[in-house]
Amino acid sequence: MKYKTILFDADGTLYNFDKAAVKALKSGFTKYNVEWTEQRFEVYEEVNKKIWNDFEKGLITTKEIKTERFKRFFNAIEVSNINSIQFSKDYLEFLSQNNYLLDGATDIVKWCSEKFELAIVTNGLASVQNPRLKNSELRKYFKHIIISEEIRFAKPKREIFDFTFQLFNNPNKENVIIIGDNITSDIKGGVDYGIDTCWFNPTKAKNESGIVPTYEIFNLDELRNILAKKI
Image (cartoon, rainbow, N blue to C red; front, side):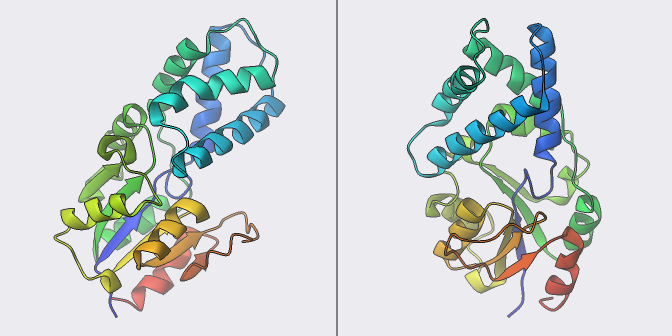
């Protein structure tokens, strides 16, 4: 079995979303003269993770994410003097300007691009992902960019994989692998679709989901050894 196509997740796999989010939130708090603390970012992470989990389960739409996320966040930190809808717009604008890469992302993507066809498949908001990816040094290495909001289906749903496979003229599933950091969207989506999966787990989190990836790596450079055997 040889791989021909690699599907990469974006945030948390190639892009340092936490760093971008912190900068965007700080910019928003500065604009509205609200105190920023690391503890408040931890609260935001919890709220954001919960709302994206709801999105993956089909319990909330991308439109509702934009309006609900900061409503929940400001309630949690007891800030009442900011319009959550306007803050969301400001945050997304700030976030779209930041495309920090994780360590090793450029090297591994460049290496992969010389041997495989590549695509990014992301559960992101188009208004954020399009500017970030367009202006990224990695963009030239990817044949396709698939953003869930644009096609109205998100990982782990099979429809986003159907759409992606059609772009690549429906390759054999044994020739495709997905690489991502989210066990319930990237890995579950790949497992359910019948393709190989690689869980990028840099924090060495314990997998209690019952979802079993084909491979697990703790840094991006480990991909070389896995993929080199599948050329």
